[in-house]
Length: 246
Image 1 (spheres, rainbow, N blue to C red):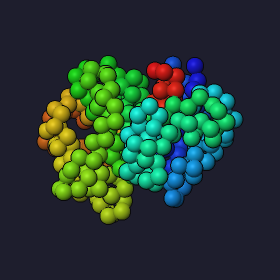
Image 2: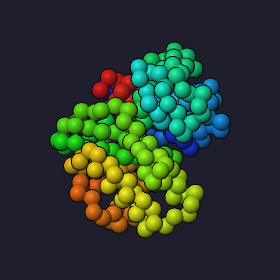
Image 3: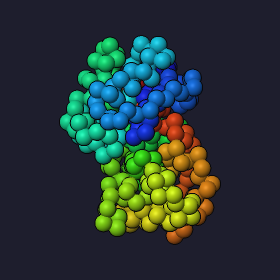
Image 4: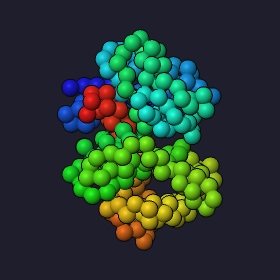
């Protein structure tokens, strides 16, 4: 069964059809830049450009970088504040010509995909996926069951949101070396570990492709730390799973 997944990020909107039997893309993903300002209408146009690139006409799952409850976007940390309290399912469904649309938190989508097809497959206990990108997203699982909308990137670290200290964007903006940035990630992981005592951390987002550059530099964390196996496609796969009711 193939379903379409779209992943809305702070810098890009990407999507592709997904084979739900194997948890992989059936075609090379298509990506457009996230518009600035990233207003609801402007982002909806970007989502439509991705979906229409494939001539898709079935269900669509769409991730959003913020809290989503019943298809309504409740927060908007790394996109335009106009998204707060928008019925995103209706907005995006209307823009896609009435296609069935399911909207969920981006890290939750990536986490569900990793727990089903990737690094968390078959794992029990508490596992936490963290996506490092424009911000830091989180998905918390207890024996494989999701606790939705945790948004642990907004935990306070050194008096600020943790994602303002340790996201990939901060690494790029401040020109941090892998060594320097890994120290920041280590402090953040230690803080999350102190609060939740997980057995497993899964590190996702685009930076997961370069896990060998920084994961070996992280010390003093008791939980196992592994890179996401689906890497930056996890959100697309998880979005499609949600649209299929999985």
